[in-house]
Length: 145
Picture 1 (cartoon, helix red, strand yellow):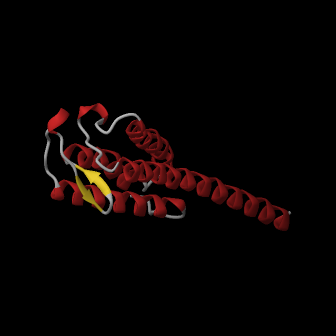
Picture 2: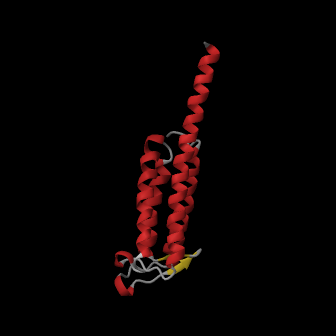
Picture 3: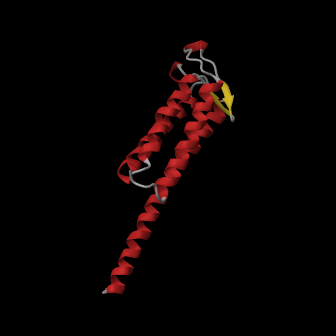
């Protein structure tokens, strides 16, 4: 298995933290009720029920594997950005998809936007790292020239 270097270390760390947060949410509220019966419990400021926790695990656990290879990490990061953007449904209802109940919708939207921003920042970091490595290759080639 490839070692985790550069930006992918941060990807692994972000996915690890978010997975742990989702597990805490599942432990705090293992309720799978839907519709008007859906409940929520705040965990570190974010509303969780079992559906929300499982959605988080479905998004973040694959990132722990994807972080090991750049070829997997990049598409995973884009998919995570798209998946987390679904949290913006909270702008229109406090019960998105009839599964989640967001009693504190502002904090949930902030979580989703913040996580999307973190994933986007990781892609920018990757681009910066690639630029640096390409620049150092041309300097090395010129020095050898």
